[in-house]
Length: 506
Image (cartoon, rainbow, N blue to C red; front, side, top):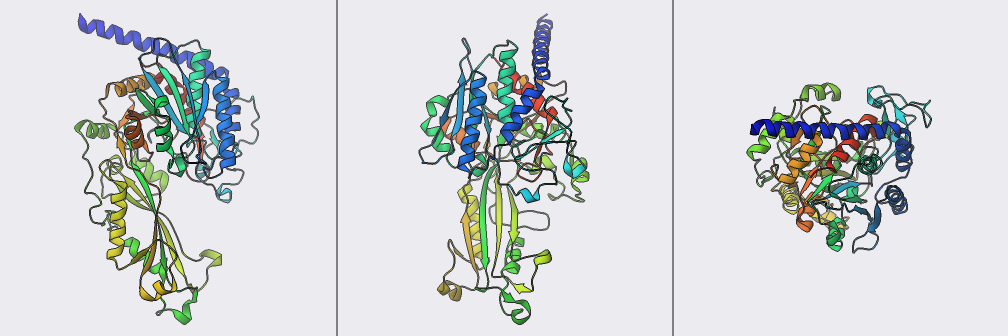
């Protein structure tokens, strides 16, 4: 009898959730043009974090979006002058026993318009029929009010990472209100403006406005859904740090015939140095690099095992014959620290190449950290490895005295970095989120101990003592951080449904 009663309750909950989801869908279908027109206006505002004038235009636009939806809003800054503000808003629901904070960031990565495909510009959003790399074409005939194919992509910097988070969160709340559905939790909204710059002032903002930011859980609407397209709830992120390396050769470029075999070539030295950091199986050789990793729990291992294997499809799509990792499953590799070369350059190539020995060679390293790693300690391990290769490390342009004194000179500049974060998967409030997301899909949703990407979520735990889970909404093939960034329209619509479902947890 008890089992029948439980089944009846679950069936009633599912039926109620389905009814609510249908009402959200009806609202969206009736307002698609309005939603997309507003989003295109939002994407048209440049959002590179260092562009303070346009950042302020973004904050004003978000405030306007929130005020139009009846959300009280204010800007939260840090203690350092010139901080890009976070846009904050809240909605108090009578009788609500829980408080949820929804997070997204509105700043984006720097852009090089010349690298975007013909007909595409970073801040002039247009529809394309499919990813440009897969033969997609610009929908040149579209005008406001025309039917919108849910399989189209909307282009533009920030279209997926992460103005999509702002768009889906605010429209989810609006859909509930306009459908006369009352949220069951108090809602707070926090939209950051410096995430792509390393969230360098986020700790200050949290410390200064701690009282406003109390909650039962933070929902992070950032990053892509699973490669399979299935909805996913993620319980952590990797940490991140950048290191900028410059190896020096002669004081000026030299003729490679007249000086070859005599003048040290900094490009050759740099690539040898970088090659010394990994073996042929992509294992990092830097002493202690993997020593601090906290092992996954049994439930975290099971969650990874439940993820569908998409490697064959990825290899086909990306043109990769044999991935790195020595056969370890892709999801498991995301749980390990990494050392990546973001970029490397020295003199010119292609039509501008000259027969020279360069004066210097530069590279940027990207270190992804997992739980247990400490960002300062991890960067020191890299620095110690470089020193052990015979390099004199400096933090400035070398003087003539230093050039004559040290045979091998390298300048190392450390970027702002932060540690990884992981939330227990069995946390009751997190289980409520899982259940809410599940109501939006007939397919089982995916659970992951951590995303491959990075956010400074450790600050949420450290400063606010907050519980944090990530619920991504955009397509995995969105070209985030790169040219031709795009978001699939259907994923925006589904993102609205997902965020609305979370606003109804009890």
